[in-house]
Each structure stands twice: as C-alpha cells, then as structure tokens.
Length: 479
Image: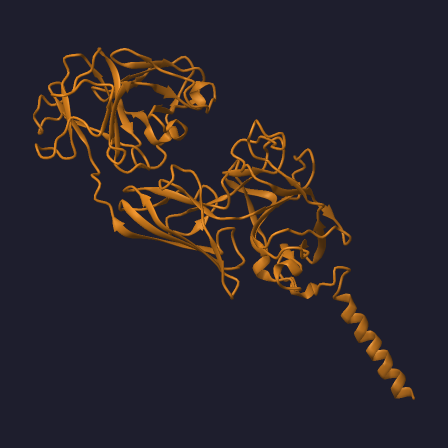
C-alpha cells in the first residue's frame, strides 16, 4: 500500500511537470529555443512552434535599416485555420494576436475605401492592433497561400495607434525592364515539401536590364498613418545574388539583352527576410536589336564618322532599342541615324516619324533645343522641343513628374528652390512616370547620363544656385 501511494505521488509530480510545459494556447514551450517572434498555429501546417517560422528583424523601408521592435516573415498559411504569434525573450513568453480587419492602404482618389498612402498596393490587406496575453485572439486568412506578416510592437513608443500587425497575400510577380516597372504576377506551384515555385517565361530585358521580385503591385505598405514605419514588399539582390531587403539589396541585373526565363523559389527557413528565397534568370534568346545609335550631320561630325562630335545617343533605361539625345538645332542642321559609326545601314526615319522634315536629310522647322528619340522596336523616330525637368530635394522636395521645368534657349537653365541632392531628367513621351530612365547629372563640369546604369552618385547643391546645361558641348555648371 505504501509503495502504491509513492507511485501515485510520483505520477502526480510527473503530470505536474508535464503540464508546466503547456500554456493556455496548448503549445510545447520547450520548442522555443531562441529569442524572437514566431508564427505558430494550425494554419502553418504544424501544431508545434517551428524555428523555420521564426520572424526576422524587420527592415523599415523609410530608413532601409533594421527597426527596433519590428519583425516580418513570409510564411504559408492555410485558409480558415488559426495562427498567432509568440515572443520569447530570455525565457519569458508573450502571446500576440489581433482582430484583423480588411483595409486598403493603396492610392486611388476615386475609391473611398483606399487610405491613399503613396506607393501602397491598391488591394485588400489585413491589419489590426496587436493584443498581448494568453487570451489574445487567434487570426485567420480566407485563402491559402504565401503571406507576408509584418508587426511592430511599438517598443519605441512612436506609433500613435500603438503596436500594429499587417498580413497581406504575397502573390509574387516581377517588375522591371520587362514591363516598364509595372507588375507581372506569376503562378505559384506549391510543392509537396512545402516549397513554392514561380516561373516567368519569355521576359524581355535590354542589355544591363534590371528587375525585382515583388510580393504585390505596390512598393511598400504603411504600418501607421504618419509614415513612420513602412514594410518593403519587393526583394532585390546583393553582390552575391542573395535576395533580401535593405540598402544592400538593389535591382537584379542581367548582362545580355534578350528573352529570359526567370524562376523564384521559396523554401521555408529561418533567417533574414530574403533567406527562404532563391532565383535564377536564364537568357533563352539573345537579342539582335542594336545596342548603340548615333546621329551624324553637318553640325554633328560634319558627316565624318571618325569625328568626336558625332552624337552617341543615350539608351533609355529598361527599354530595348530605344535611344535619346538632346541637342540645339537650327533650320540649317541636317542629320541622319545609324546603329554603327560607318555608312552601313544609315537611315533618316522609321515607320512613324514626327517633329522633323524628310525626305532627304532630316531637318527641323524652327531653331531650338530638341529631344531626339529613336525607338527601334516601336518603329518610330520622334523629334520634339526638349522638356528638361528637375526632381526631388533641390526643387522644393517635390517628386511629382513634369512640375519643375528648365528654361530653354541654346542651353537649358533652372534656379534651385531648395538645398539638397540635385536630380534632373529629360521627358520621354509615354515614359513620364519612370523619369529616372532618362536621368542625368553634372560631374566635374560634364553632363553624365545614367543610361542603363544604377542610381548615380549624389550631387549636392544649394538654394538659389543656377544650373546651366549645354547639351551640344556636353557640359554643365552649378553656380
């Protein structure tokens, strides 16, 4: 009898130890080893807390750097099943949930349901205020798929509405030179091992073309009305072709122009926000479109291809076979085009020609500063009065296209409104929203074009200074 009582007491003690490993949420807390936030629940496909569902340090898009108290994760969630968050900090456990509401943070002035935050996707997402405690509400999504979960626990006490969480469906697409930086959604294939694959066939990119992977058709999502915290919704690549978010991860670049097969893979894993993703970009057909274009004429090399004053046109960023140049021309200026610097394949026009007089050598009908555009794939040549604009810091901090024009004469001039980084561009018809694709700046007195390259080095200038651009001489000044 005494042995039986001892055995019963031992069972009770053992049961007590076992129950200590459980909370009201019925999770084995021993599964949590490292500090951090974890996504857990039946919606993740497991009743356990799994390290692969640990959230990474969040990158605040506003500063493109890690923000204290911000966490994010791409995780596959099953529809109509519960999930929640748990935080482990030095052995202390906190449960998080929210009463999620469907909202639209996108910009559409005609849609009263949009919060009209710039660069946010115009689509429904889920948002709620974080609730802490063992009774925190569980969350659900209506549709199975990969989701981007972002939270900010307001540890810096700078969010007016307190700690926030957003959950948006990550329907990955590509955006870049293949679609004018629009959005081409991919079709997700969910594999038996939990990985996901997206494939984009026949994506046309110019030489040195660029693109990114985006989880929706926006660029960022606000976590607060004041714009203090924004989540990045695209993935770029670093020098080692690793995908991620932040200042280290820029646009993904290809070398050759042509058609590409692009593949994005997701495999559940712990680590930084981009660690579960890998990609390939294979050129399946190299482009035969010319990569250079020149202008020759009596004022441009005096019809001598070896002359330094022959105009080498600038490629329009992300547009295969499109070139531009700005020059002052008189009614006596005659000119032609050729893809190479010799009399082989020269031409005066293409299928559609606007803004100049032909047949014979080309001429303009009035003296002036002109932008000349050759679009080989569009089969069009355009000559138009030049429209040079400023953008950003030095122009009142405005990032609206077409609002800060230069004054044209034989040169283009503008007086700077405010101090900061100087940025300028030439208008290309139909491409106004992507102004940076025809951007340029002044370095050591010379006009240097961005062409197909990345962001140019910052050039600082002060309010009240005058910028003068002499495109024929290729020089510029800031005085």
